[in-house]
Amino acid sequence: MSQNIKSMTQAEIAQILKEMGQPAFRAKQVYSWLHKGVTGYEQMTNLSKDLRAQLAERYPFAVPTVVRKQESQRDGTIKYLWRLSDGNCVETVLMRYHYGNTVCISSEVGCPMGCAFCASTLGGLVRKLEPHEMLDQVLFTQIDSGLPISHIVLMGIGEPLDNFDNVMRFLELVNSPEGMNISMRHISLSTCGLVPKIDELAKKKLQLTLSVSLHAPNDAVRNTIMPVNKAYPTEQLLDACRRYYEQTGRRISFEYAMIDGVNDSVENAKELLHRLKGLPAHFNLIPLNHVEESPLKPSSRNAVARFQKTLEDGGITATVRRTLGGDIDASCGQLRRKYNKEHNG
Image (cartoon, rainbow, N blue to C red; front, side, top):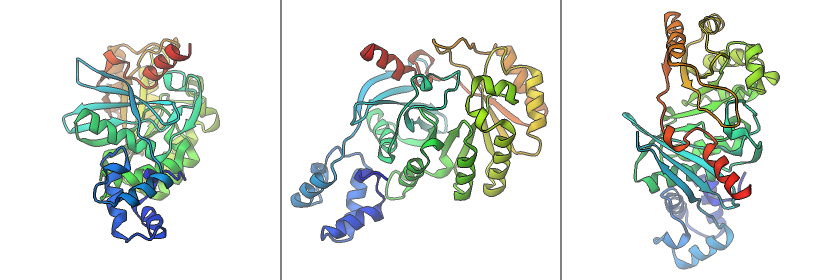
């Protein structure tokens, strides 16, 4: 676990302050300042100068800086490209909905999963993000935009369950009443299907929404677009989803990118109905974002409508995700990739 003070719980901060001879109440003060988005210890005005200096020496912390910021003229979506302390960049997207403002954060720099329709994975995994680097995306997006964040989705760059321990710590921090206090019920975590980690997550019985990137009704199709399927085929994945539901009582949300001629036929929808029988589920149908390096094309509106109707006629709730930020490279990985190309050739 990171030694960055912003990745520590209040109890851990209390312990280091105790070792420095400080009273217990100082931990709440320090923790509160960190979760308000201070950029240095000098802003912690209710601490002594001496304590601030000691903390700065022992536990230095850095905050991300905005490299690029794009705001959609259509729907107010804001996309940030943040530079981290080591020079790597990650993306965060702020989306406005009628129920509140949602921030979509990254969990890794790059992604090891290799999905054929996603720009995030081009170039592979650089490194995993630490808890404070995920927290800072939420915190500084809120501060920079001036908009209160009420919902979080871990659907940006990276596979959250590939960075399991750091993501669990981030969830603990962002859910903390003394911190941002964002309800678990307002958090969605997306996975491409790491079966052992889904089982591990189920044991924690968190009240978040698990979103599974399914994108295909069977192994033949899924193998061609999602390499993870060769390790954890659809039957194993759907069995893990059933176990998850049994342990948590939380309905699974399935993400399904609609790809022309690949996974969007009525027969594909009927196969899904058959395979998901008895599993309470919601399907989020996503019009595919075109990625320059990929030959895959989005399904037609008619194909999406037919697919949705087939699922709903079969008893599965299906919604079509509203496309936000289409004018600002808002799909995962595009802005980071464009920036890297410009600066690294």
